[in-house]
Length: 307
Image (cartoon, rainbow, N blue to C red; front, side):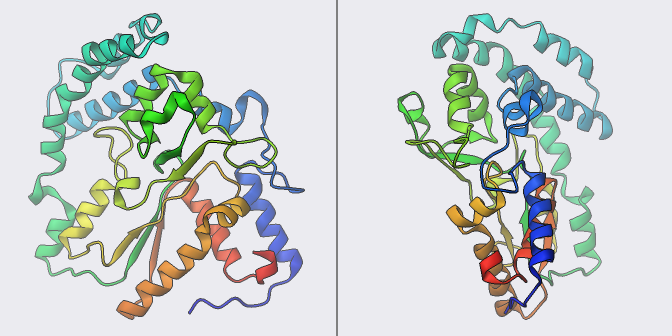
């Protein structure tokens, strides 16, 4: 069992303050601090489709070159092509966006997908496959804690403009781009938090996606944890020995525990893996997941009144 031991108020408050500062929450309350035009929330909701598509295609092109495939278009070429596409035609209605997406964006993504996936999924080139041939076996249970870019958010309650997105990802999938261009004000409103409570506005409910699908891919073939999971599977890991602990990256850490019980669930997941295997548990975090893990390690040994 992970037991809480007594820590001083000073130490706990210091760790809490550092973690809260990292995600933009004030020290005096759970009110979200908006740091002007450079604030995390405002910056993220202004992501454009050109940036997303350029990122995806650039990653694909780079991977293809790295694996020996030839491409007739440079990464700058992809970016220039996307940037030259006018966005005026699809800003007003969803139907015009669908036409733009099917005509311009989708062909760019699908044109490199098959070659890229074939290269990355080549069994004999995977480190996991080679290690398995050398006798490597699954041992310690693993828990993944992703970052904010890769932690998908699903719609569980929405205003009329987003009713059609129920249980779909408004962050972390192609649905994100589609909903952004269909009605970007609606998309921004649903991702934004109430400035006083630091929680979802009245009538809106976004929650973290769960399972490995929550952070295996960001958009289409832009993989994040997918290849790591695949390589671990080569040496015997599966859903019984691994867990993905995604979270709502918009929330302050206290609200993350208060609303979702995230740190309590993470604690019990660690204990369950240890109980069923008898092995120590490995935490693998990425990006903001590193600060979440650091906060958890402080939280789990603090007195309950501080956690």
